[in-house]
Length: 434
Image (cartoon, rainbow, N blue to C red; front, side, top):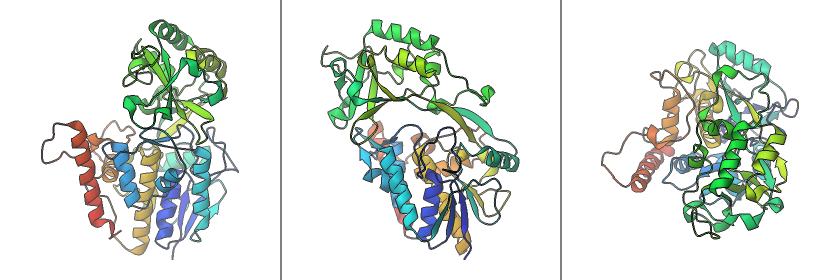
């Protein structure tokens, strides 16, 4: 039986390999690390997290939770490993990134159907192939993809800083999950009064950014992972209604809601490191230390990792891909992951699941599979293959992608739960045939 070649050992690549192996189909999984590292990667492990360590909310009544529930029905490797390596994060599913990557790698290596090849791919192979190289494919492979697709788009992607837990001034902070969801110690809150916020804001918008090097400056900044300094430049209160919003929080020292607030989330299970939630940045390292230390609770913060910014690319999927993630101009070629225009860790993983199922179906002589309407996985597949979309931009899981319910439900929470249950029921109805 023909083997499938998968290029890229990120979230999409490992999910595709897992689906194929589960159907008894041989896989050659190509991962260029450690032969070559991208600007944002540093670990040899598969499914390495380079931005946040959170996979967003778990509850079914939110789009991210609905997506993960569907992925579990489809046999997701990443959701399984995430739950096994989770760290406290309120209602979110966050992981110890090193343990998560190690477990994914271990499980991939445990399958005899999967041969992991540590080498850089510079040409697109013949046969049944899944390109899951991600937004940080090597320059040589990126050029081949660009030639194949007739060009690609670029945007900036940024990561937030991480500080040590012991360096956070807890006398100037308080423990609370927003709206009291989850456990009280899931987040450390760093409040600012109006005067403190004003000073911080002025320092932030005047701070010096790091050079962008070879990035395409003309494409601007992608909205889904915007640097905090760029967001702040859009208006005095933009970040106070964004990453620094105080909604759902009460400072026990004052009995009132803070004027502004930064949340810190556990970076590892041991709780020795915390990341600055929503503070993706491209400021110079010295400027990050200076400006972020103006937040009272971080006055003496020790930075384990400063925020970084890197290139991200995606193809014009509505013109190039079908709902099965197959490349229209070449049979047997599939794309998966963020390069297709799905945005987010779990969205990338979900696309890998679908690409893997469809590559297997092709080899086994079965019909292409696109999840039913009303499912979140199906909605993402339809979005990236919708030829009517003109100005294509990446999209994460969103209830706005789903067709409305037949009955009108005024309560948003109840409506979202009903949408999610409808999708799960539709997927369960045919899951046995997959």
